[in-house]
Image (cartoon, rainbow, N blue to C red; front, top):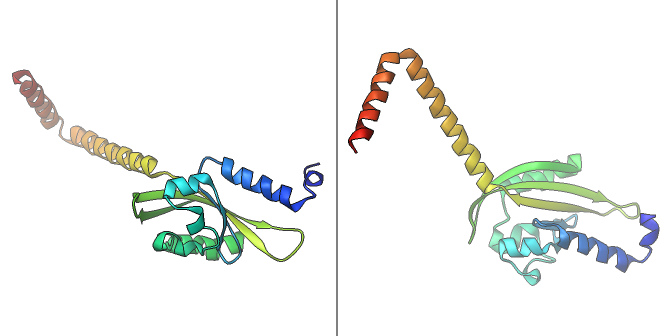
Amino acid sequence: MFRKQFIDVRDACALAQGIVDTVREPVLVLDQDLRVIAASRFFYSSFKVKPEDTQGRLLYTLGDGQWDIPKLRVLLEKIIPEHGVMEDYEVEHEFPGLGHRTMCLNARQVFYEVGEHTNILLSMQDVTERSVLERDKDELLRQKSASSMMSRHFPKCSSHISWAAQSELKRT
């Protein structure tokens, strides 16, 4: 049913662009040479770039080279050609105008029934805030564990420290 509905190539292209524009995260459609064929509205707004500065350009040259990231090269040039898909691939990078970001990348190679060419769908989610919260949580758990160990090994010291802290609070 789905295939029969899109006999006209223009209709299929319109559907594909509609899907890319509907997704609420930055998405790129790349050709086999890693040139941008299409990008989602969220890609343009998130990375503050224009369609005319993006479409047809090599991914690594976008935004004055801000996408020339070694881990991204590994993903697109090694992992995707060998496996066809990669999910939850984290990349940390300093983006001009955005600062340090942790991006969770998902990529999938698209094969077609007719022809030899392929495309790559690349979606990205900014998980910077989540990563910072996870690091903070891990640090707090580490501190709690160290404090717990101290109170087990030095119970008199910990009760004295607790008493001293309470006395100080009462004075203020």
